[in-house]
Image 1 (cartoon, rainbow, N blue to C red):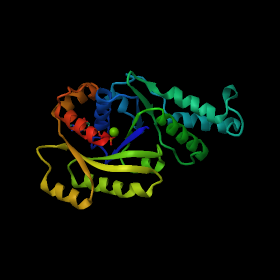
Image 2 (tube, helix red, strand yellow):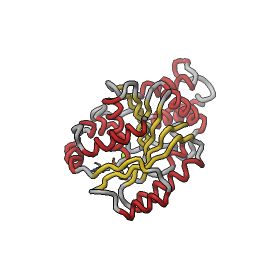
Image 3 (cartoon, rainbow, N blue to C red):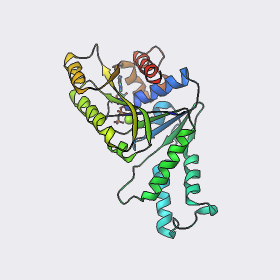
Image 4 (cartoon, rainbow, N blue to C red):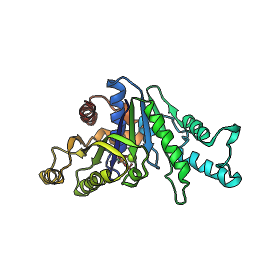
Length: 261
Ligand SMILES: Nc1ncnc2c1ncn2[C@@H]1O[C@H](COP(=O)(O)OP(=O)(O)OP(=O)(O)O)[C@@H](O)[C@H]1O
Ligand SMILES: [Mg+2]
């Protein structure tokens, strides 16, 4: 059975960072195949994972647009696609080709979100394909863009664990709480929602502890502010190469153990 773990939260709180370190934990401590889904249109998960170098990655959004272009020029959605394939086969093939295969981790980049005037049949097909591809893996880790719309766009159908990432601020926590409240109203199944407070210096400030308590959010762990990170960011080194004894990685590993147990 596939275990799907999604990260969400306010902008810049550390979703991509923690997703990457979580994936590293899976690589080092778990057997089984891993699919990373970059669901942020700004697409930078591959950089922190050290995948694909400078190459532009094919995205599901670009495939969708290409297909819409073909529909406009030839009305192809009603008929057949290149090579006599059905449109479902064609999309399926394109998405399979878009998967960046790594040694232990495969990566699928969603790219641009569905725009206005999106062609819903194509989107529905793509969802089915992404869901089906996900099922071929033991673990699927989704790094989402900031905000909530991506969840309502339903990148994927069911999520076992939704990890809401916040920085140690009231605003970050309010966003996380809104997301936790909104999740059940969407047509996605979320097994369990947890909170991670990232970039904590020393302990959690008591005022924040109070807010977390009142919010009813289930705090699974805190991750420290890590000065080592900045140097990686300056030099563009993949965060996945952070030394194993780095406090932030140790904290993420602890969280991952809890999530997966
Ligand atoms: N624990 C930490 N210690 C130090 N720096 C951190 C920590 N976590 C994240 N950062 C830094 O904060 C910045 C934002 O992190 P990141 O890109 O992971 O956030 P994000 O939530 O994915 O942002 P976005 O909403 O733009 O996708 C990065 O420069 C990252 O290096
Ligand atoms: Mg990000």
